Length: 229
Ligand code: 6GU
Image (cartoon, rainbow, N blue to C red; front, side, top):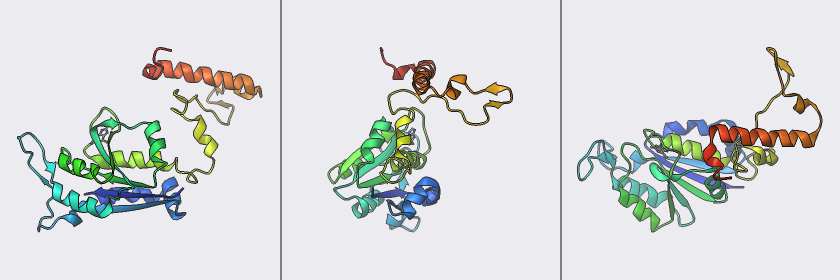
């Protein structure tokens, strides 16, 4: 275990939720150390300006490089991976989450508006490893919610965060398939029965049924995951 996460954002209060649940406990236990930094603390003008109009014209605002430069000078060390959430980034996957979970230091640069001046990313790449990462093909207002999703996906893979690590082996995406459906007591609820095979005690038959459910569900809702097979 033991991971340090720094987050730079103009909305530090967004990250209050990291105090609760699984990640909150991991922080209390000292496995994950999170520090949130307000980008506006690295401005020097009266209005604490972080954005300006885009060169070349166009809609929206772009985050100015100077406050980002000063913030990253403070938090970005050569051993860190800088993650820049962006709809223009590579796709975030369980494989990337696993890779990031082995790092000792992650820095998240949460941009708003139409993004951060690209020179910030280029400069950062001369200091540390940089990944521009997207959650998927839709647009959020800024990187904060995306960073939160990535921190949760990565954080739960850090050794010691989850009590029962075997539970990680049976989830969606672990074997390239979606998860099988789950049931618990009562055995009949509102006249709906739990699939009888799950009550059979036949562990081989149960494993085969679950695999069949995984394949069927994946073919129905995510055929792209199956490829040509
Ligand atoms: Cl990482 N950022 C933003 N702004 N929008 C997104 C995203 C990230 N991933 C999907 N949409």
